Image (tube, rainbow, N blue to C red; front, side, top):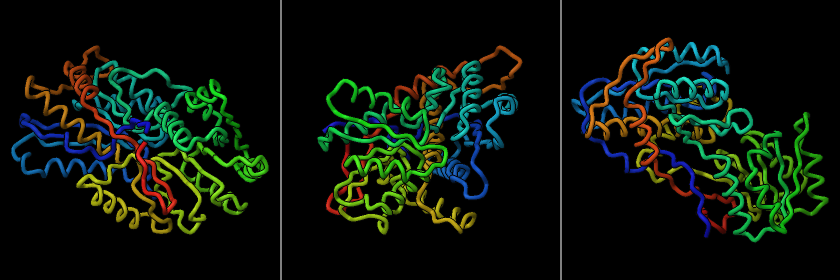
Length: 374
């Protein structure tokens, strides 16, 4: 059976704590998470920081500090100013943001110039920001990962005809590898794009009339849910249909009352739910959600929050491990200076060599079949 590599979430036991010198270990996070109905990114970082600092083996070791900076808009200029405030503090890494591509790009550029690791937790922005600095590590699965995963599902079910519904034009670039596979094979893939009205009804009726049974939906979780609701209204959630959702958070949606038990609805999950802290992590985010957004049901942890939790652990572990062979000291940097962080390259080399991945898990709503690993 084919396997698909994707970054793991909530790192397993390879994060071994080792000795570290007693100075403070400072990380910066630039977040664009709204205060109301937030994705829980601030909380997830705090949970990771507190869990590390309270560990018995950490007694007398470096205290982890995370400075959080709020990003009010996706602005390269404002983000550059924020970075110039961060550098003099002396940080070992910068995390985020999760949904501001222009800001993320300028962070990567500045971190690249100063050789400070930048952890991204956002989907790839294929169209505008293809160049990635060596000091940038994106924990989010790539477009290629997702394309290969979808292709693996189609092969697993011996599907030769499918339809792709795109919410945005860049969908064709994001899933380029999947499209190329159809071009070099005898299989058939039709592509339909949502128009400005964002109403999927006309597209779904066309698909129904064409008698296409396998439908791939490339959209965010909200639009994916809207499409499935409309499909249910049109009688398109019977055993005849198979839906494949590329959004990595769609598996958190509640659909039990929405569809026929026999329909195949497939989505990817990269959450490591066997991790000892996962349930407490999810419960903490749920409680915070209920306190700040009680008018909307909590569907589960946002992927960006879990990836930020991972990022804090990954940075701390890498610094501590490198401290076994060299003293990883931090120093204040400046936007107006040519100085770089001399340990940045070593840290990135370690992270790239030791960042392990788990296979993505495919979850199906069909009650007769449990989770399948691709």
